[in-house]
Length: 350
Ligand code: IPM
Ligand code: MG
Image (cartoon, rainbow, N blue to C red; front, side, top):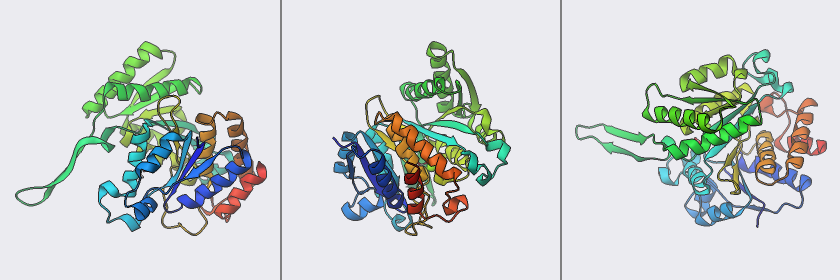
């Protein structure tokens, strides 16, 4: 069985996953590593962004680490063959419904944030984003021509009780190991799916997690609070679309999108999917200057959540912290290191 399947993907994906490979080989040489083309790279090679074989390999691995997908090169490709469709099919195919997106501000980077140091120093938010439902997957979805000219486009936001409950459970469990607070964000003031979301979370809380402090917050207010007083949040639970948006906002608080890892988990024992949240960054792809820390920290999460090596995860996290303390900075953090030099800086601390 493969321990770690790498899906480098597109843009800066191959550059940052190459550093993960080096770190993994140094830290845990016993892990078996395999690799498949994914996203646009797979579309170019096989005509689809995710082959059946690659999905089967992902489901058979213990952990999957993806780099990034997409880029202007594939703009004209039909939506179901676009690199992003490969990612959605991978998430759905692996059944990874709970997306953990930590927004953690490393002390030495507090000045790289667009907010004042005192607002972000010590920040530690865990966003739990529902990942395999909602408007990303709801049917029907289409664009149709209208008889009198013009068009009509439809996307569908849909959630069931069990979809909400299983992701809410992950948020409550995580909170118990942290500061014991969950804020659940939806738009129950205008959306029926938001109303059901609030009901299901409230009910689960009453039945099983009354010891955890639960607040409900409207998603627009959550966006405002994230940039106003982000440290009020511990675990922030939300749906697929709001989670996409709120996690980018939270990411910027930490100094750079290039720092943030994520883990997507399904039922216990199933492989997790680990991704840096930064995307393919076509503007800097191929230049060797992308920050590999989000990918390296995604591997750290894989060690913790899928590979049963919390000991190695702790060592890797400490090594990243020390490298930053000593001033290791890629250009997104205001420095000059190349991708490989940042990898070297982490390896030196290991
Ligand atoms: C993310 C990305 C993806 C998403 C895209 C690339 C499909 O923005 O992981 O946040 O919207 O989920
Ligand atoms: Mg996003």
